[in-house]
Every structure is written in structure tokens, then in C-alpha cells.
Length: 47
Image 1 (cartoon, rainbow, N blue to C red):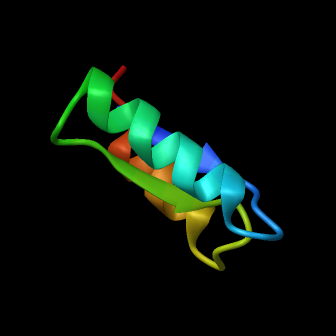
Image 2: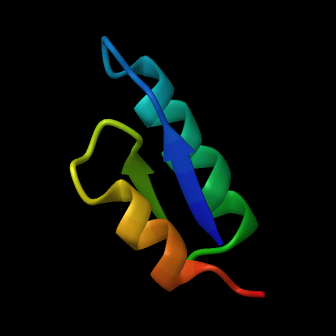
């Protein structure tokens, strides 16, 4: 699982990290603003 977020103030980042860790402790969250976010999405995709 991979959590993707856009967070101007950090509130959304905090919420998505809490949510995805409740669902799966081994998952990560990435910002959609991150330069290599598209690459991380394609490599972490679980077909």
C-alpha cells in the first residue's frame, strides 16, 4: 500500500500517515509534490 497526499500545512500528511499505518504498518506515504513521486508510484504498484 502507498499513501499519496498533498499537504500545504502538514495536517493532511499527518492524517494520511496515521490512516495508512492503521491499515498496514509496512506502508509509506509520499507527497505528490515530490519530484520522483511518479517513479515511486510505478515501482510500488502491486498489480
